Length: 255
Figure 1 (cartoon, helix red, strand yellow):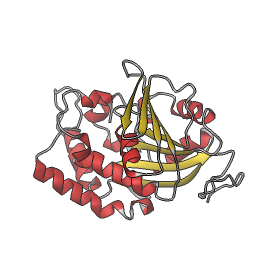
Figure 2 (tube, helix red, strand yellow):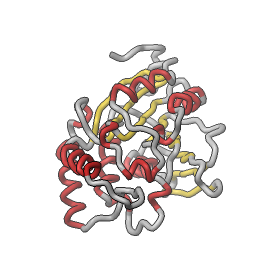
Figure 3 (cartoon, helix red, strand yellow):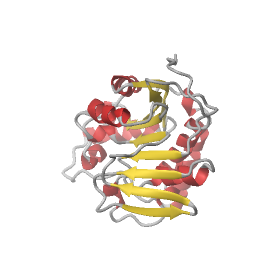
Figure 4 (cartoon, one colour):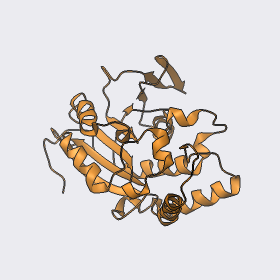
């Protein structure tokens, strides 16, 4: 979760339909992937790293990197360490997360390339970005986004940065039509209100309904290459393919 969105937030972020659904989708995407250590780049609150540590017994440690942290610190989830760092120097991991990060920088290829170059040869990457430029809204402006992406565009960024894309898909397809209508309607009704985040606590019933709707697509979302609010890419470094049993199999391009 973006640190900017945390200001004034009350309650458990993990109960919000958006974050609960996105974490469940991340679980589904990573089902075949084994990892013990996580590097969460642009981690914000560190929500997704902590979620994976709690859900995956084999995951042991996470390093959350964000330039907006006031200082470096560590915390513990039972016997699992979560390190919060302002700089990624010296950070290495089995799994790298860039959850809604690349849209915040002008040079997305450059940022991703710098992370890839510093990662171990067998590292896996999950990159998520907001999807489709025509969905641009005050939410994007509030968070300082530079762009939204199609799946083809973010896959191309990953390849330019030196990654081999293993899987690309969209999520939040079930609510995509409703969100598209609302956002396009807002464009037709200009407002003088300042840009603001769409991520706010909701009444319990509405939150439960939206969470239930998103559950419908979770089992099959990795097959969705048509539309959604978020684009997911699962990739690996171009230097070596990952053997799911834990070894390296050399360079192997995925179709």
